Image (tube, rainbow, N blue to C red):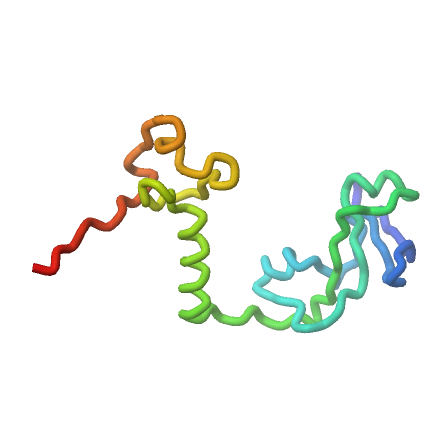
Length: 143
């Protein structure tokens, strides 16, 4: 398919925003993910259009269940720098998702805690590769 395909906005939503099909949004509009890839953020501005998902692009009468909001790139602001407090909070959240509650090992990947409740080694005895986790801190004696 060439670049000669252009689409016109169709107001199909209750909010009255123009709606574009998959890969037909005009230049100057981007989703949050696309803005983030450019080190930008919406900056408090409301979305100006809606991008319909790939599955709904071929079905014009279908109500899109996975729309993405489009923001103006020229109004976007730079991403705020990471603070030490925010970095510590993110590390704490990731530690909760990657630490086994039984053996206290912190893995380099997210554990299936919702389904299994622990790492595979604690769940069914499957040995874990020592390069995939950080051993829990040892016991420090006061004297």
